[in-house]
Length: 323
Image (cartoon, rainbow, N blue to C red; front, side, top):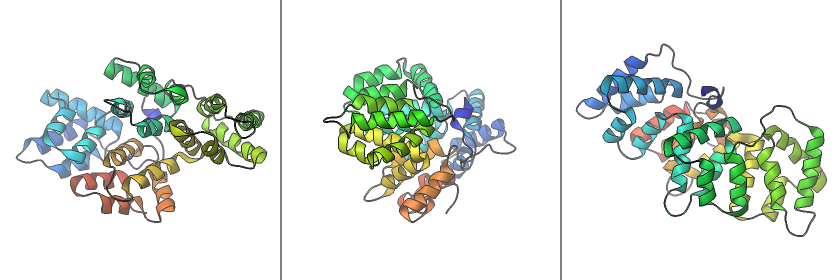
């Protein structure tokens, strides 16, 4: 399972000389004493890989007879609690939990559904689907079906059901053909055939899509982004544009989401935490580079000026350095 969730461009890696028992014991001491030793918690949980954190949680449970995440919940509060607990969850379960939260109660937080489903690989989505079913006893597809409607629902289901091809081979003829289909489904006709956009953007591999977008530009003299923005609206438009962004550069997609979460009045800590946790082992180094390009200042300095206390300290550790 680990391989689908670990990239070579993360800031968090396996800790050398790791001992689950020693870490579990240190965490127990940090929680148990009078007042909590937050520094120890940060030093351990942000500097171990997720696979190592799972082993710590196992040892903790064996030694204390209690669930590590429950003890963290009981002992910490606010954004810091949310971050520390998130770090102890397996990545597929963490995603499943975010999706559940996005669909809970009245109204659905579409931006979270879009962020996760547009950016995860099919292999990752299979893991998330399994974790979702294990945690909630319901299929992710069924839940999405009951919470969303129309073409937006159709596109999300393609993604949730891990239908995207995953191959490093690209087919130039297919790219030309798909570009032609997209052109005929949108710019060339009166009204738009959304189905064609959904099928191509949700089923082809990201590498294949990149080639298709180049061909599209040649035929249409317009970028695929411009056509989608002009032809499609609402949540489907947001989802398709997110897929295009991820196909072009996934790290840039996340850098933009982080930039929006810290820019302006008030910080969106929920998004900040979600992205810092879920990308720290995948591509945080690239996200940092893209953030700097986009914002003109480093992600490190943005986190520093926008967050405080233990929460801020822990995020800076996940960020891994200044640019």
